[in-house]
Image (cartoon, rainbow, N blue to C red; front, side, top):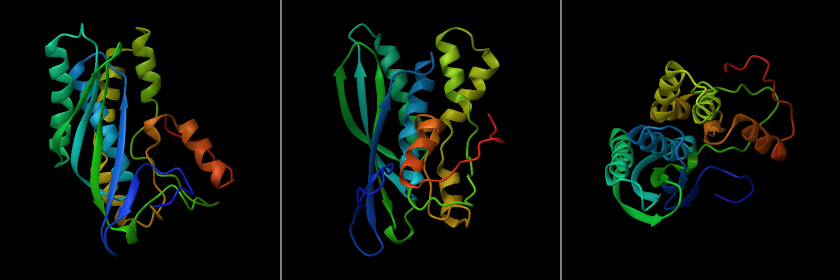
Amino acid sequence: MGLDSPDDAAVWRLSEDKAIVVTTDFFTPVVDTPYEYGSIAAANSLSDVYAMGGTPFLALNIAALPDHLPPEVSSEILRGGAEKAREAGVVIAGGHTVKDKEPKYGLVVIGFIDPRNMMSKGGLKAGDTLVLTKPLGGGVTTTALKQEKASESDVKEAIEWMSRLNKTAGQLARNSICAAGRTSPASAFSVTAWKWQRLQVYPCTLNMENFPF
């Protein structure tokens, strides 16, 4: 995989039909409950491999934790990540933890991929249809949560969607003509940044009039 476009993971070819795909991602808490935070962070890290058309099999924890954080909170964050990885059929084989003022958690994820069927951000062209695997608006809800303005039902729904693996969506994309070789998780930052990133490489207009938020 070259550096022509900013893809979600690095890919190293091992043979004609096999390559390793590697990615890492971590972030500060987006919800108040440590278990759900760990689950969301792990699902987000795994999504980059699914977006490339790969199958994750191994992961490492990355955590930055404050000295004052109770051990039971740290344990719940790691448990959330471990159980989400187990759901994906991924083994967490260790990791690294450092001290920081604010908690941060995520995974290094390694997977296998067939380089002949690899999906990337490249190739966007006029007439393509954008297929969403999750509803948009999770970031708005988590921001409202930090300001104590989010309803309990909205937070519960956002957590459910953000914790959901893109495993099935990735499998469908690999077998679907809709994928057309162009995929990426917009939820990793925001759909606006996602749009800007692609249109810098492939100038065209993205019609967002009927987006489901």
